[in-house]
Image 1 (cartoon, rainbow, N blue to C red):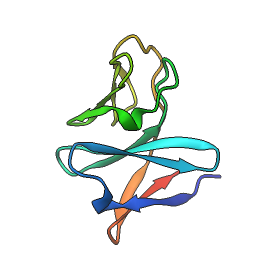
Image 2: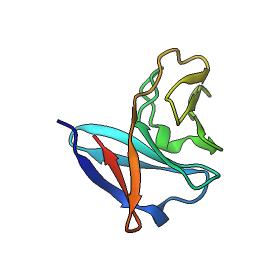
Image 3: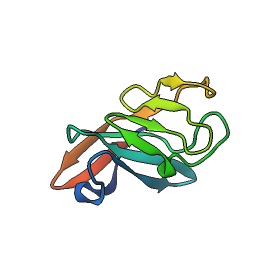
Image 4: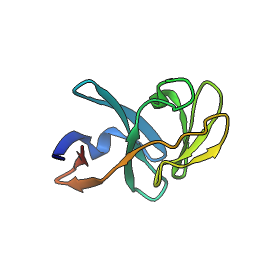
Length: 103
């Protein structure tokens, strides 16, 4: 059953930036886009399990730091190969200055 997990303070992430969030044995990323929206996706690239927290955020996309695959953070869809498998996305909300993720 899914639960809302306190991931970080909203102010921990700059505009068009990303942080890593680990919960249990899983790794996620929290992305803040250019319009102050927050997204959560799997934290590893589907191409070669590289940590996306080291990637580049542009608007609401993230680029893998190893082979430059680009993912849409709103949907998890691959926009640029070599990755061919989409990321999972997770609902997020901001309450009381904290970012919560439904996992």
